[in-house]
Length: 209
Image 1 (cartoon, rainbow, N blue to C red):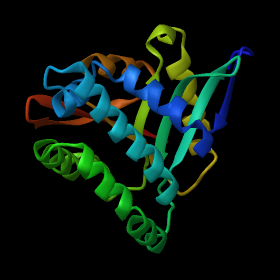
Image 2 (image 1 turned 90 degrees about the horizontal axis):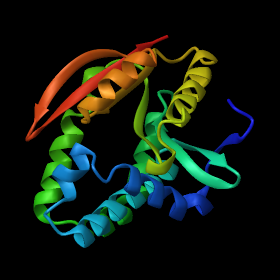
Image 3 (image 1 turned 90 degrees about the vertical axis):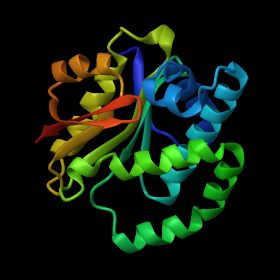
């Protein structure tokens, strides 16, 4: 990693900067457009912020990890990753504690969006459900900072962690942006399968370690 950047695990104080980063980086993402875009930019922003805010809070209940990369104190990239070694009982307890957050999210999204999200959650990561992977839930880089290798730095940071653990098969992710497939190929991922979901295609990618 270049000396101008620093990477660290995020805590709850980083929520506002994380949400702003992810909403801006996913503004044209096919999944976010499919879920939240009805032609009104203000409603899109409101729904996308509510969803990313929920994902941020969820990570602390379900023992996921959020890491970010900083340039002179400014968050320029981040990811959320689901770990393969979390105890089932911890997940159940965390899920119960998360119920209020789920209810809150449902008040901010339309019924059709909730239905789409539920269907998406059923099919996403299903290609690795019986195998132990670090599952990359979300990764993003500020649009103005893209093309500088920040995303690759984040992926290599995950790989370093994965290589230091024995209880994992590697990294898995789903992307709905076809342009990302070639990018992930260059970082060592392979295309495991594809699944058509409404108007978008889920590209299921993995790295075996």
